[in-house]
Structure formats: C-alpha cells, structure tokens
Image 1: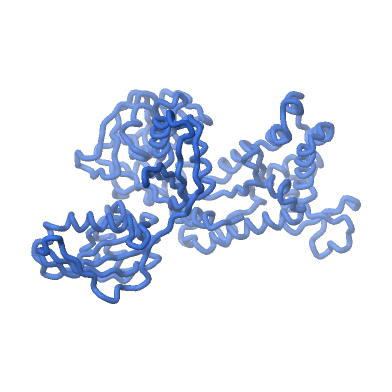
Image 2: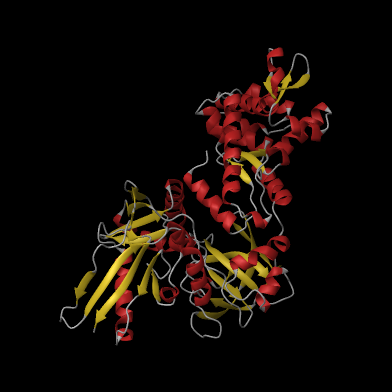
Length: 565
C-alpha cells in the first residue's frame, strides 16, 4: 500500500517537477500469500490509486500544469500492476489489446469497461452498471473477470506444479514455452511461475509502455526542469544549451551514481547528458560539490577513456552519445566520490546536489565470518559507499555500521555488499533505528560557558526552527551555498525572520547542509572573526552528536548572543 516513504518520495518528485507513472508491485503476494479474493484485490488496487492521486492533489503546485487531481488512471495506461521479483507486469491497455484480438471487440470500449463500475454476465454475455448487479447471479466486475481471473488461474496452476493445466492456460493466451522451462525435475514452483509469467506478461514490455507513452522526452522535460537542477543563472550558456537539449553545444553531464564494473576493480560513472555529445577520448572538467566558477579549487580535468550505454548490468561501448541519453563513462571514477558535474564549458556552475527526502535511519553492524576476509569487507564497504548515494558507512565502537533508508534498502545494500563488493560471507546484527534530537521551545535561560583558561566567555540560546523551514533546508530550497540575497528573501518573506539575522548566518549543520542553523546575534563584540572557525567547528560537532543521546540534531537554531574575548 501507500506508506510514509511512498508519500515522501511523491512529495519530492512533485517538488522537482518529475512526471510520474505508478507501478503497484508484489501483486503475487496478495494472491498467493494473503489469499485475497479478486474483488478484495481490486478494491485494494483502487484504493492505492486513489490514495496516490489524493497526495498529488494535496502537494502539487497548481501553477505547474503538469499534474491533475486524477493523474494516475489505469484506463489511460500510466498505472502498471507488477511482480518485480518474478519479472512480470501489465497495464490495462495491454490487457485490453490481448482481449480485443480474441473477442473482436474494439479496444477503446474494452478499456473503459475493464476498470471501474462495469460488470459482466457470462451467461447473458452482457455488460451492465453497478445498479443492475442484483439482476444477474453470475455478475463479475470486468477487471476481475477478464484480467484477475486468468492471472489467478495461472499462478495457482504454477504453485501446484500442474503442468497440464499450465499448458492449457498458455494455449488459451497463445503463448509458447519450451519444455525445459516447465521441467519439474530441474525447477521448483517459483522458478516455473517466473518462467511462465515472464513469457506471458513480460515486465519489460509494460515498462516500455509507461516510459514511451507517459513520460516526457528530455527535450520536453528539460525546458521546465533545468531551473530546479542547475545552480547557475538561467540565462548563461550552459543553462540555455540544457533547456534545448542541444547535442551540438558543449557537454553538461550529471553523474548520479557509480556502478561497479564486472571485474570489480573499478567503477563506471553513470549519468545523464543534458547538453552536448560526449565522445571517447574527450577531455572533461569534473566539478566537485564545493566548486565555484572561476576558482581552481575542487575541479579536475580528465580524459574519458571510453563511452557506453548500460544494458542491464552490461556496458555497451559507443563511439559517442548525444544529449538526452543516459551514459556510462570510464576513466574518471577516481575523481569523484559519489556524484559530480562533468562538463566542457569553461564557466559552468554545478548541478544541484541531490537532496534525498528520506534519511538513512536504519542501521546494522556487519562483520565477516572468516577473520581472513576482513580486508575484503573494508574494501567492499568503501565500494558500497561509492555505489549508493544514500547509504552511509560508519565506524562506531570499532564496528562497521551500514545506515540505510529502510529495511528494503538495507536488504539490497547487504546483498550487494556480500555478492558484489566484498564477495565474502558476512555476519549481520539486528537492525536498529536511529533517532533525531531537537528542541520544542526556546531556552528559558541563556546558556553560558567559558574556555579552560577563563579568558573567553560565550552566551548562547537554542530555539526550534519551523517544520516548514526544516523541510525547505532538507529539500535543498535553502542552502549554505545559495545567493545570500535570495536566501534572505525566503527567510524574511516566508518564515518571518528578522532581516539582520538572515545576513548573520554563520553556517548550517551538520556537514554544512543539515537542518540546523548557527546565527551570530551579538552586538558590538570585537575579535569575533578570530574565534568564528572554532565556534563553527563546535556547532558542527554538537549538531552531529546531540547532548541527549549522541544522535543528530534536527530543526534547531543556535544564537550566539554575546561573547567576551
């Protein structure tokens, strides 16, 4: 169903103006494990679609014109129902096409009847609305009769290893499957189920329908998304080239992740080309997160040794790849930690750093089963941290700890660590959930401290930040690198800050981009510049490890009220 994490991801997509399609996964579990009746399953699916539409209606920007209140609609085909584990999926128009070929009924008429309050009587061979349902003893909802019933029959036949029934059902849907795929001596029920369903309703075909028919091309999307992705002026050369997805301009690429090569010795840098055409042998500038145009700091020039496109887990070499495509680059992986801007423009700004709407809150300690594999684990953890932008790898109390966004994310990370990165058996401790420390009201008295030599005194006060402001910081709308005038205008107009305070923000924390703020509220104190770095370092430490339980702070404003230096 729609979880808190689903809502969070939807909100982030809406904020970044990402066009959306919906895939409802794990449908096989509803049928085989939960044993839902077809009508119960339909109601569950309908509820999920309605809930997602309600979230869009709640959080969308009406002025965007990208989303409607009923954005997700199975009838138009932007909703897929799937079993990712077994590799099958379908959309309503796909099924309508199959049925139309069999029944010689117009596909358009069928689509309208295969979702919603349309019912069918097999005895009378008649369609009718819900208010006439009591007139027909064999009345079944169209979706249940023509879509769910065949799927239920096929899954049950596979679960029971009834090969004769499977062949009969496959003949009815004109699907041919080789005998070795149904061999019960070499395959268990789950494998046979996967073989059958992937052949009948391949997930790749449903995904292709969603992408081609319901998602915008890069030429369309970049016209309105660049303003949310690019840190620089919207009228500079790089921005203009990206907005038109110009393949003949200079190159602008955002590397979003690093994928381990098949030999495990290096990484392939994976990203999207927003402008230009990247070729093998190109010299590119790799901009780090702290790069400022015109500065020699945090920028490296490297040669791209090869260019390719990813097909599954394979990289297919290409001579060149133009704007609008995703690309795999070799030869630059050692120049970036996780993400980076790659360009041939001389004065381009960075892409905005990806801000995740979920934080790594589930932690687990990992260790090797064989002590001789310790070096493999250490190396594997480094590779995992580079391959996954969200995961955090920590060393706490002499233990290796992995922090992930949720149980599913953690499960994926552990599987990749064991099978791909470390390649050794692991011991995994019980997962624990991390927390955040905060304050709920302003300090009732001023906090006072002094240095060991008693020559310096500091007076501070803590107060809570508004939840909306915390959200704006975490989403990247307000940042430390932002133009001070722009940041000041937002804080004053939207959050009621005093204009003077907005100009005296020393830093955000932790890591200079967290949802806590240190403000200089002193008046007429001499020598502050001499101790500013030390105070900032102390704030970063305190926001990383709170005083209550050594957990990270969230939503706290610290004001330096006075100092005696």
